[in-house]
Length: 57
Image (cartoon, rainbow, N blue to C red):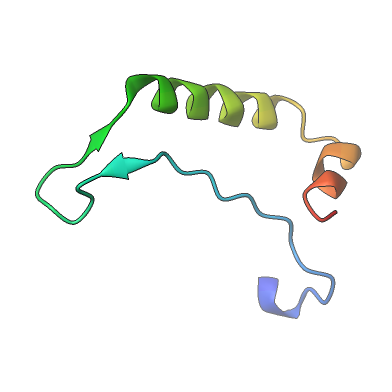
């Protein structure tokens, strides 16, 4: 029912840079992965109105 919400729904896309993504296995830098996890955890810990509004501005 998101498509009829009229004002939209805030979303976040989080990715980790990788090499050889279209092969059988890709390579990522461990610190990129760790930092992405840290960012995700920080975002999930404080989903207050100000944080959600900052996604749209």
